[in-house]
Image 1 (tube, each protein chain N blue to C red):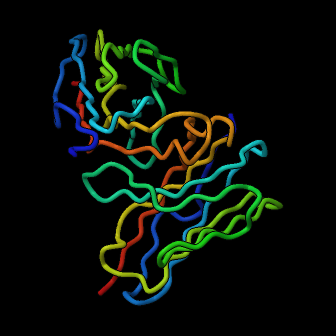
Image 2: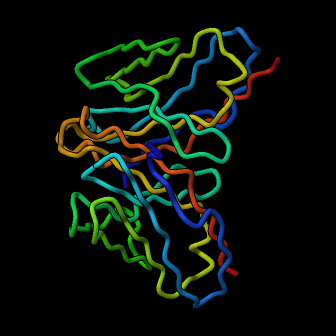
Length: 113
Length: 116
């Protein structure tokens, strides 16, 4: 079946640097995408979402980029902090059934002091 | 508000035993979900509910049953546990409806289940 996947399982960055986490999706019918953050021992937490009619969306210190041509999205974290250390998941869905999410396998972000 | 709570936090079962996981939410959400998360993988939807008294199958429903007798509670049952059901189970809830703005999912802290 179609699925959402990630290129890098672990990303290590220096505190203060910018982080980029990538995700590839294969279902061309998906038109809604979400990034979640999961800290150790906790459930996932919503970070930011983007609809397919957008290429870019910015939040506080985070930016999501969507490239529909190559079915790729990325999460950029500016000035990475120790508190950003977590596993990040992308998830895909459809706008008309956005409660049904398909999650990727996750990328672990490690922030070096 | 407590948000989404799950009980128990940890459980060890022997093959063939049964158990029920309880999820409760105090946000008056219509939709509730059960996911499982295996090492190195994302979450997979087991069952979900779009309202009190309703349930529907997700991506990996086999071996599980659910009930939504009260709006605030969503129960996940394992009738005859198998080692393949060793996983971390997450419950989530959302306001409900098709539009994404109504479907941000709020997750509980998880239940770690080991089946020997």
